[in-house]
Length: 295
Image 1: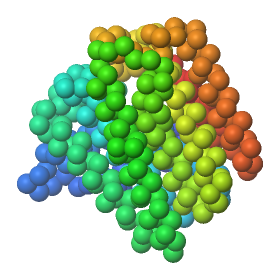
Image 2: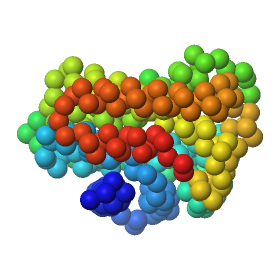
Image 3: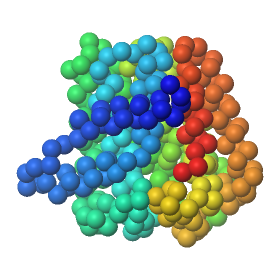
Image 4: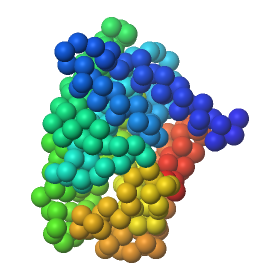
């Protein structure tokens, strides 16, 4: 099976797993449930749950306990997108070619849906306790996921991004933002896969380093696409960084140097992955494809 077909097959598999953990849309609070599910179902690459699953498989994981975590990390990621699109943040009206949550459901309901997905993600991940004899692994994985999501991870990075809006940022600040805002959740995804598979601490640390390189390369490529892409290709407004007066790798380093950095980070990630051994061919190709995407 070619990479494109294999990727489509595995994306469908991930979609089915995420779907079965979404809440039923009923009760007096139905509106927020609809907003949550609408946002998760809006599509996307499903990068984080797929990286989690493939890392788990790389280390020989075969159980079902990975599945609630796959759904949980997609809920967390979706929560961040809902909040990112709000008028007080990026003020975007389109996401993946569809109206953003605040446009469709209102500002207030979008805030609630983003908050609800964060909490529901923890509730979902906790379902893994009933699926394995290794409860200590599940507990550690939940703690790690919270760390990579919160003030020392994604939310911390978003905070530094917001407080530096309309300010010139140096490369160290941008690296800090990328490391937390984007790379942290990719680190969480791959590390959870490794932890649930029961690998040793050294392997978990290597996986974290792989994910850091993937995350930073992914974000630099995102910055490049914001300049070179089109609305039709990306399904979201282009030149958003310029409109919001954001300093990025592209504004500091230029397109050519940014592309070179993407290649450098990609190469580091692939070399580290190959050092782990095992059948990592699909995971390697997945990382390369996602980093070098054109949409």
